[in-house]
Image 1 (cartoon, rainbow, N blue to C red):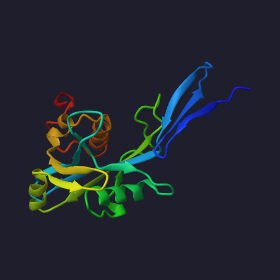
Image 2 (image 1 turned 45 degrees about the vertical axis):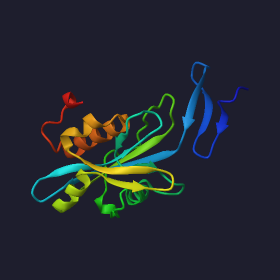
Image 3 (image 1 turned 120 degrees about the vertical axis):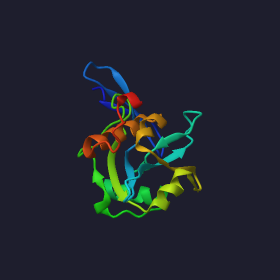
Image 4 (image 1 turned 90 degrees about the vertical axis):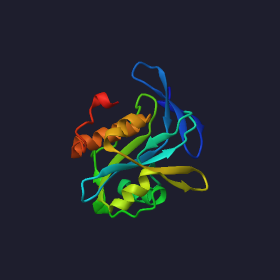
Length: 191
């Protein structure tokens, strides 16, 4: 009897296996677990707003990526607990579970034909004082032992044009679909 799957390679961060499909062909599948991402929409009582995003260098491109705060879910951790932890780690802010809005009830798979990673997408709309927006507009660097990043306030009309990350585009569009577009000028043409 032919096995339905076989592990080719394992690493603490991911596993590569082959799976037998319905046509009897072996398909490569990479598993990395589950991740969370949190779209942080900041606004003031005067109506000024922006998305607090992470700008960091990734090994796949020369230009830095703009992304929503995100990270992997730890074993035995719920998606909402992971979202709160990731925002605390990357941004330095402690969110309350009631601050989180789950944008899609089921996990989403970025590239299901090959990549077994699944994601949970959240949002948080937070009213902040004007000086907070001003501080992040210029970028606030954060250094960690394993990475460095910059927190940047991105105006709503620029989010889709500054990111090269498909996951960030999809996350932003999920936000717009769930909560509405915060800026009337955002459209597919702004890509």
